Image: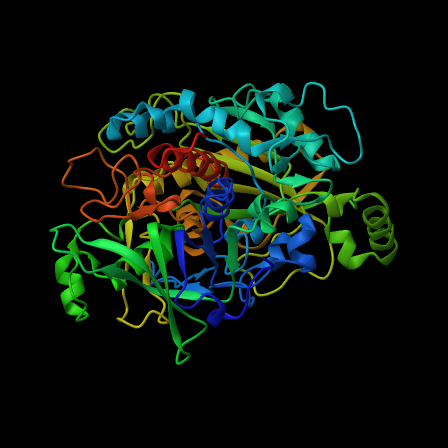
Amino acid sequence: MPIIKELEVVNSKSYDFIIVGAGNAGVVIANRLSENPDWSVLLIEAGGSDAGIQEIAVPVLSASASPNKPYNWNYTLAPQLNLRGRSLPYPRGKILGGSTSIHYNVYTRGSAEDYNRIASVTEDEGWGWASLLPYARKAENFVPPTEFRDITGETDPSCYGAGGPISISLPNHTYDFNTRVIEVSNELPEFPYNKNNNSGNPLGLGWLTSTVGGGVRNSSTRYLSPDVVARPNFDILIEAQVTSLSYCSSEKAVPRVGGVFFAHAANSPIYKVSATKEVILSAGAIATPQLLLLSGIGPRDALEAKNIPVVKDLPDVGKGLQDHCWIVNKFEVNAKDTPDSINNDPAYAAKEFEQYMKAHAGGLANGLAGAVLFDRLPQDSPFVGGPDDPVAGPNTPHYELIFGPGFLRVLEDSTPAEGNYVVMGCIVVSPNSRGSVELASSDPFDDPIIDLNLLGSEYDRHVMFTALKQVQKFASAPIFKDYIIRPYGAFANVKDDDDLREYIEEWTTTIWHPSCTAAMSKRGCSTGVVDPDLKVKGVSSLRVVDSSVVPFIISAHTQASMYMIAERAADLIKVEYHFSP
């Protein structure tokens, strides 16, 4: 059936499975479950279609896909106490593909230890690296750059899958800056080269893979190919926001979810659709706990404070929120071949657009970043190995440096009208700060209260400080002599460590990787929200499959981990209902 916009079409209907949220994980689940022609599947998305939106499709334009767009939830964070009380914009995708349709296309799997730790705390080896790696490869389709350059030595293609829905590639166009970044590994020994940074051991400096194939963004909607959408047992409903779960009347002590209520907008009619087998929440680490709370699943005191009847007292719903914080450090450079020239050099822009229109080549076909460094605190740091060190193991990074040509406007009011720039961003990828998602009211159309508690620990602040010191050292490499002119903006005013700490407070923001708000724990454990099979504890016929289920944030950009987790989750469901994966 074609994608449905008319909510009344599915009102009062019944499906075997209902998936809430067509984002990173939801479309994977919907695709895989609808492979069984005997199962009816409904995928519900609050946003609209991603078709025909240029700033989504063209990789280099991805920064303009958020925030303040109609296909965005456009949340605002609660004031961040360690960032001078700043309230930051917090975009999440409200569109088919979810945030995979608006993010920066970075594809990093994380460390093997990240996943082995999940397996350990859940007592389920199926969440370990060795078990999940085949699922990563199932999702992937490694493709060559559109400029067909020689990538020998840049990566090992055999590390990736072939033929999966999500095409990934190295940069289609190699800017001079990207090549210089990689050359630093030959000049400064503390930044060793790693050809296979998605092998489970990410430490070192290497080329960056992105979810870009054939010069266009590959969001999770690649799982919604025309043949999949045409399946007669599969419906996709868009522009429909789920407002709460519905329950079946039962004499059993365990409440059973029987479907969902949904509406187009506040003050519009509310409809209901039923699920005979399961409702699967894939709304993301913000909307999933919000929906659980609105449905009476969460901390008793929080529910009673909003006059919401308690269905299941689960104290950890919405708790434990983690995200990666970062600073987008910029430098003005003595170069013309950065994306800035598209804006300030008409001849350069004409050439770039011609290349892209003819062959999806040139700079427009690139993601925003071209290289990445994953690194750790020095071994003699007082934080390494101590009780406040949250890393999953000795091969897991504390921080990341990410490199890209062009001015990336994140907190600035405007982009410079002249000049060429590069980014050396730094990210705390293994934070120990945790925040929360709480209800502002019992109205599903009111945004929840999102507190990331960014830099909420001395450890996190120390890691960011160390990462910035490494940026300064990296930028001093001989390869950048006569290339880097000066740091840009407030970074140029950093003269000593006190200045650096002020810079951190003023310019740290989030890279939008919310996780851990409906975390897995071992079966029978009184903490956590879902069991290792991703079923909500103490509730029947309800499962969660999205980034909220990881008990610790992955030390990487999170989309790759979610493809892995969603693919395995689909197999768990198939096995339970006796359909061969």
